[in-house]
Image (cartoon, rainbow, N blue to C red; front, side, top):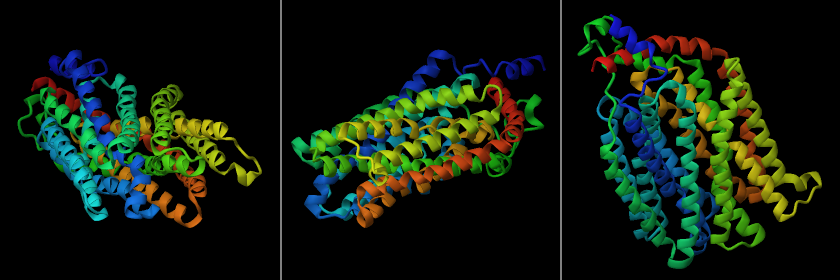
Length: 446
């Protein structure tokens, strides 16, 4: 009994396998997240080349980005559930190998349909990775460290996007757009093999099988663990808010290189480098604003959600001014406009860390990957997939500058949803605390 108490009382300071194993797992998980987004975003700097070579519309170009988010959304939950019940490490390795090989195969595409199909397979491989990776981070580190570390994990996606945009533009300009896919796809295979050395956390026992006698009576069923996701109002509102904010973010990241190319005549590689600065600002923003949001929630949990809502509205106002100031009779120079876009990109990623940390706070630890994949489904299907596509459709209809002026309106939905999420957070977290203690005791006895 005393052993049980000790195991559960120290969870705020306990590493799963020790600090060294935790930091190795974190480094490898972050590295794969970088290559995940390199392979995902490398194509946006190729838009000018593909538009000329295959005479594509902006809608068709946008779909080349959106298709990955669609496949991630469709397959994310099944993949995460398998990882939760079988092996997270082996699942990650298989996913990384698939998406890396699929990215390399894009270089052999001879038509738009072939390239679209190859990009869909990239998304199939990436399905569930963000969710499983977040669960690995949450499992290895004590709760007091999770918010900042998850912010860093998801910020690495922005770093990968920067590398993808820059490499795509530079390699395509020098060696042709096909070569870029091969160059960025190979490193992911190497990191995937190294990931086999990461220690996997044990599957939380369900249905009272294999649990130590002191915990056996209250072991959760699979149904109850899944129900902890569906019954949480906090999870539902956070999913809506996170997805809405990513409409603005993904439209900006996907179409900014083309905007700079068309508006200011920048060469594709130069436009890609400038756009990469905005993505990098987003990575920095997700870290800094994640800390700001955490501090806002120290006195009251509602403060966290209010801070996120205010930041969403600030991002909307900044981006709409940056792209639509001429409608107010204000003409911005190139440097001034880019400065406003840069600041808007910094603000726009404010939901990334808080959304993941909040969801992981209020669900059963035995389904962390699955719960995170529900958030990922919304983010990908209703955020990352919609943003580039809507941006392309609006661009075909009213011009690219007007499209980028209108897409930040989605931030209003994000701000409202996060305010609503704050209402049920405390109750949902309290319901999750008892199962969390049981899961920790199971790991201690394992």
